[in-house]
Image (cartoon, rainbow, N blue to C red; front, top):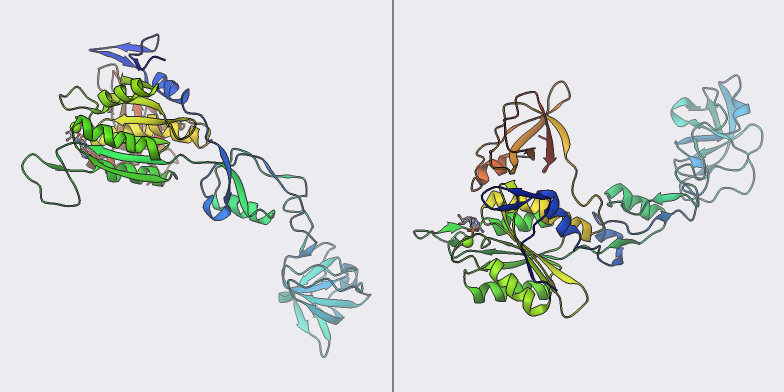
Length: 432
Ligand code: AMP
Ligand code: MG
């Protein structure tokens, strides 16, 4: 198997160096990341997991006809010409069995929301429209129509009906659906375990004082948070020095414990950029694949990828060597790594869709043949349109611009997009 590719082909965009279109990179990645195995997860752990099989109701929900309101179960015909007085023959709380005797003419049964309808009754008079009428009697103030305030058996879901379709990304309400059809666990795709490491001799950890030439490690915190926010178990693989040995040791640690490893830094043209070198080595030694790419996007052009067999079990660990600049690391997470995580977790579409929006101001892209992913604030204006404006500094080290953004706006290289023109937007963190 070839262990090192410099991809070429029709998707190729020519600039200073050969670049690969984003879609081609996404295809390359998705062809190599298959959905993981399925398992039964307890409902309490299944939030955000992708359902692997259709779930069908095996009983009616609700299972029996019951009252939607507190009040009095009646024979609706008895209420003709209301107000009428009826004899109260009992009280039926929720959770009671229905009485064996049918309700007779002129009779009513006091009944609480959720209690089963007694035989013979065909409607419920709500308690707010009744009055006590002496010992054992009630006055019904309004006529009630047949089936008023009754929930039919199966009126939420019939036995045999589809409760949830395979592919659902489980939401709280869907977990409630599973509980209501009697499930205690959900058949879902296993979610990839994602390891995160940062590389760089300049990086300082944990708020320690900065010496000259040092900066603080922000990428590891950012990437761990992204992974967790997107619902994947995250493993902190720590900071890694810019030596071949340290990078090799850390990547091997990731290979042993993770389905996916995200590293930041060390994938450019620098003298001490060892990630791609070590990935190549590991790929050739273990029979995997590695790629060193220039992606035709701004930011986040350099990217190293590898798939290395795990050894202890089938399948490969996927490595995403993300660039070190903080905005680049996050952008390549969103458009390259996240699609892989989604596909492994069974989520479709693997590549998140953009939504159409309107430029709220002129947006100026680069002229270097790269798709610009501008950090933007998207909001819905008074007229109901989604409008985007720049969130601040657009350079790849300016984390402040990204932190102020809730979206990436995709602007192809070339002429500016003018105010009022349509753009495609990838929403990141909810609308402000
Ligand atoms: P590199 O890709 O390693 O050449 O790094 C590119 C730029 O990103 C350099 O300015 C690095 O100092 C910076 N950088 C790399 N890793 C991190 C990190 N974990 N946190 C913040 N900045 C970083
Ligand atoms: Mg570096």
